[in-house]
Image 1: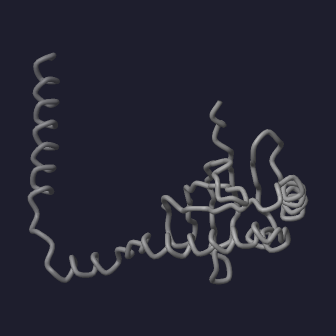
Image 2: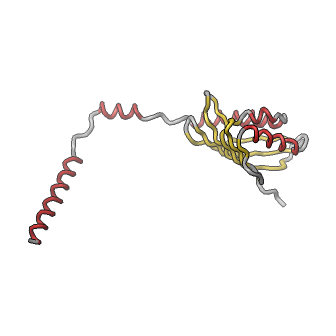
Image 3: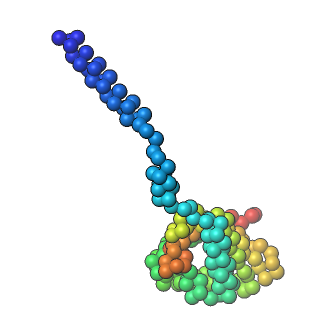
Length: 174
């Protein structure tokens, strides 16, 4: 009896294996099918062009920051944005972010300027994550601080707007 069960199992296994082999050796797809598949694949976003676009936003951001125009800086943020910075709780919403910007500008030394440099961007055409660095200089052009940041930009109504950011300053040399 045990022998009969083994034979049935062996025959069933052999049938499954042959079925898989026959299915795998089917005729190759014709060129029409391949062409349709190629057309259905979405084009990759032009990240170099997106990086240029994001850097232009960062340059305008630094101009507004250097002009001490808190409203212009806050305009880069979405109403539902979240900002996370050094040594303080996250700021949620444009109005909270604006208040934080105003406080920060009030503490900034007269004559100091900041520049933001986009180092890398990744994502798609709708959501882009930017990695960048900041450099603050005094009125004489001496670097007084450096930092790094990560912004998440979302395309809304045809333009990128910051929906999340996190930044912090580098440790000062002693």
